[in-house]
Length: 457
Image (cartoon, rainbow, N blue to C red; front, side, top):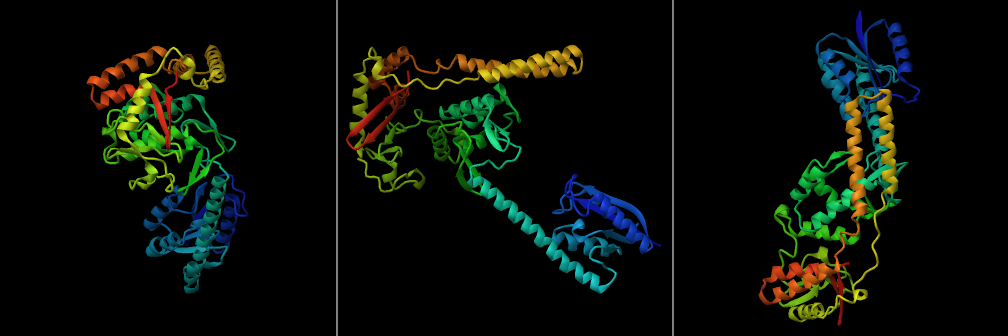
């Protein structure tokens, strides 16, 4: 009597194939009856890929093979065992034949008890591998095409700040607020470690809390937040709405580049600088920052430094003597008349509007209370959900209420101007820059033309 084990596999639980689990089972029973093979057991893996051998039923089969309790393993078709040439040959030669267990595939009509069958196994496994490689290639090409069209390729997973709805990234207001705060906090001089401690204590998102410094670093470096999508190291313009401006994102990336060796010991300008206007001067021709060195400010595109800072290698913007440009800015600040608000006022920035999300939260809380009243959900579960929703609502409401508080007041600028004047007489470079950066947002140089842009009020 030949004791046989029948192995059955489909890729997904609902896969419609000519050889579904039921079809394979019926044909294996008929074959074994005709060949007078006693079926000891059916080993079934439903919903498992043939690309690897990490399948529970297959592993149990291999264990029984090693226990010498079987004479043959029978499958309906070779690729049911594996689609990998390497795995197929390993299973047959190193597992089955090594334990004196024959392998039979009824669809291809051969078995390893004959020399011809052993030869055919090797040939057919090559074609199984080819089919797998073709599927992988088609899948990869599809993902590349999707990325080129601007679509995020993460499937159901969406990065913090977005929800994945009907194949598109849609901004999640609550999480986008967190992402904006993280970028701004890091750009303001806080370390990755400080940002992690702050964010993990204050917020939770759909993927849980900000649980590691690695997550903080990955978010800060992810171009998805400026409207880009990435696949296989290529960057494409995305269809989704950006959360972070290009300027803020580039500023954060420059901070990372500035301190490759020890990022968390880095303190952003104005606390580390060699010139008064370090990190404040921009080229009006190519958009690159100006570099202060050897007594001159010059466009990064004209320097021989790191090529990543070069935006236009043909830029011919004027080089300025450090003391001349410094003095021009100092004189400008000294001549400021804060009673003329029109000269300083910028366009009113967009105010965050989370009213729709707040209304949704209120409705969710009402539903949870109704569920509690009918007793369908335990009180501790209801309490946890209501507390989380209440916290989110509070943060969103506070963000709307304090939108104008983030702008500098006229009194702030007056005080900073007075302190800057005092520091010019007695302070060191870093103290001067501390008050200068409160007053000045940026200085744009276009040859002889210098445009000094104040902070928003």
